[in-house]
Image (cartoon, rainbow, N blue to C red; front, side, top):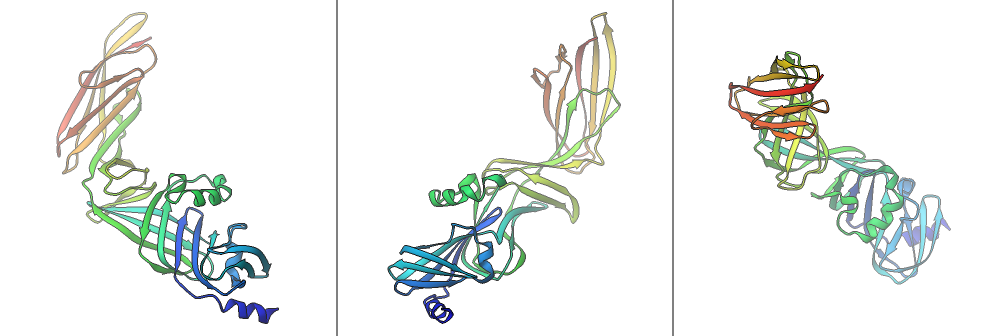
Length: 326
């Protein structure tokens, strides 16, 4: 039987493969040149990573499959050029980004278990997929949706041979014009200093799948953040944690009070400590029953929202009149 399997396996031509990498698995298509009636696929260690039910021959009419150890005997009607297709959990991929000054680079991180894999066509589908959706729905989605199942972002990568382990490669690089942001959002506070969060905003030069972003400016590491899913041309925001230099200074003065309410004058001041413009984003919420007089701000049922741009080293004060129930 082993001799017969070896002879049938000679019908395989070692041709290039088409590989589509998803979060948690990959779809692999191997072109084959089949002899008449029967052929043996010597899968080796790879068989342990192939999802049950996903292995099939496309281009002929299958009549039987026999699994014998790490080999699979296919019986079919037809011969000649066909495609061996399967879903492979030994290969997965994701996207991450670096922003160095004004250069945004998208990187692919591909993780492969088992033997090396040659991909003449390599596609990465990146994004957020709930684990419980796979692999049951993967078969149906891949058959029915030639584009991007689950709403994932599709990236074409250069052909290459993937080796066991983790491979990281840049595949998109483009200049952006990041706008620096400082933000305070939260409940109304009366203390003298309010912490600010540092971030940045830019137009996506290409579709951005959600993934981690590392920001470097003039050789200095500024921080890491999660870049949200953003279509090309959309506004992407990333927040890098608390700013260590800028700080809001607040003064609160009581103007009047009765048994039912009290009215305050609130002044919030920011001095931009950086040699470039920053956009300040303020958003505060107040207890129910408040009244607010704040020219220039967008008033909301729960508070307000305000944006303002400060030039390098500029200082600016923002004042409002607030009435709160006692």
